[in-house]
Length: 289
Ligand code: NAP
Image 1 (cartoon, rainbow, N blue to C red):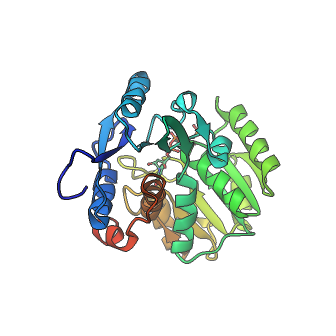
Image 2 (image 1 turned 135 degrees about the horizontal axis):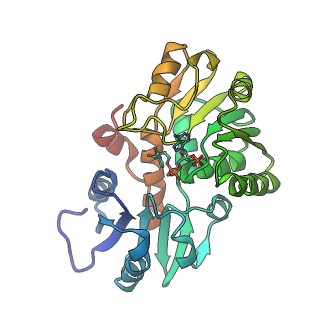
């Protein structure tokens, strides 16, 4: 935020539940401050039940837009006027721009993830990814990886009630990109080992291993990880999940979800202000690994 709130200060927001732990307000307000932009970013605890009222309120008071976090990324869809192609393919939105009284839905989780891969010094274009999970973050990552030119993606998830919906998602993304996508059962250990054996990157986009569940790993046995495999966990709390510990033990290069969080926020910042977030300052202040 600028040094003072003025009569012209623009409002950006985070909607979700819970939100009190989020570092997005610090990240955005510090970036506004650094660039002297007259904006403020506030977090509001909003559930699916009062989402419509919250969104109409933000629209009515002339907010420039907002972020959505769990559990609202899909609930927002019927309230929007327009979706970017990536948000449409992913079926989830984490950033909304309010412009000319219209609500435009974007997804910056996927671009944030792909930028974090390059930032960690890796090139996965034209290569194979094994992706664990098929929730909001996983679908956004899958869409962006496919759009950016990852050659094939094996998605492993539990065979539960969302299996058929995920299967439709996989067909849709594969038919609209050049990426080969397979949906496989996370409990099929041999298939998982086989997929990992010729993958360049293993990405955990399940919530397994996230605090307070820090003693769990999404893989059954660390010996299926090979030394050339990049292992990435999008969880950032704890900074080193059990999966990343196992990967380090096997000699794999690895990284966590902190920079995905940073870069998804940086893209949202550009959506609202048209300016680049001062990444190095924000990284140093809030994202030291
Ligand atoms: P979500 O939509 O609720 O998806 C959760 C995923 O985890 C689903 O695929 C679910 O599997 C899987 N899962 C949950 N419990 C499991 C278990 N016991 N065994 C196997 N799979 C299990 O959540 P999300 O928004 O995608 O978030 C997922 C994780 O990513 C969270 O830890 C979140 O903090 C993190 N995240 C990080 C960033 C970042 O910027 N770094 C951004 C977004 C999310 P099923 O499909 O089988 O139910």
